[in-house]
Amino acid sequence: MRKKIVAGNWKMNMNLQEGVALAKELNEVLTADKPNCDVVICTPFIHLATVAQFLNQDVIGLGAENCADKVKGAFTGEVSAEMVKSTGAQYVILGHSERREYYKETPEILKEKVQLALANGLKVIFCIGESLEEREANKQNEVVKAELEGSVFNLSAEDFAKIIIAYEPIWAIGTGKTATAEQAEEIHAYIRSCVADKYGAKVADDTSILYGGSCKASNAPELFAKPDIDGGLIGGASLKCADFKGIIDAWKK
Ligand code: 13P
Image (cartoon, rainbow, N blue to C red; front, top):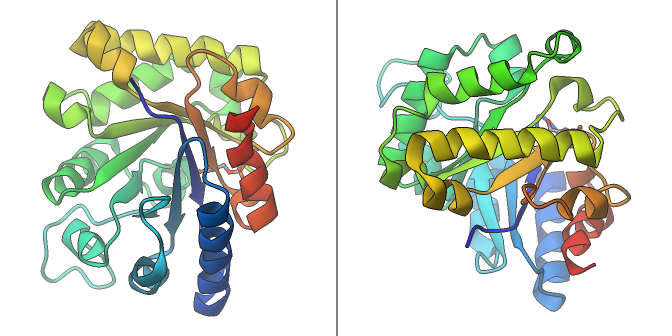
């Protein structure tokens, strides 16, 4: 059975002290009131090693928001998958639309990153999703399929099992505009059918597909009730303990 997951993506927020305080608060709250799903926080690189030391990783997983597309060496400013793993983190977000757009990460670059992350024992939260223009031209299915084919459908079935997919329509990220639960379910089911075509029904059935884009405690129950929505990748609402907990608790409703 596939996992239900709520993952936070802190993006470029929180200095070290603020991030450690938030992680400690979440750790206490979720250790006292155990979630009904897997919970992951993906933080800037600088938080990882400190947070890993006190996080109860049976309750909250830890991940990075990116890693390098090279193994090691003269790549000033980059952080490798091996380095991420050495902090105690177990996950990494790859393919976020902000990285594709602002840092020009191509499908080829992402393919390298995915391979290095898996080779170093990290689970990958791989983001896909269309722009507003593409949605208006009814090209969303084409776009998500191409993103899967470009960076993860080269993997063996065994490796693909370590991939969590996050569908994040770009027009819903940080805009307050959520995809309706019906819109999200429709494309999640399509994404699952693409996985089934490539890897078979069993692998597709075991793949967790998360929704991301203005997900909050108020809309999470409706989204998570859909059969092909296995949780959320949360930006803004992962930055406050109560907001994030509210979304996690949607799995208890
Ligand atoms: P928001 O929840 O802030 O819309 O961000 C979603 C996102 O990009 C998570 O990766």
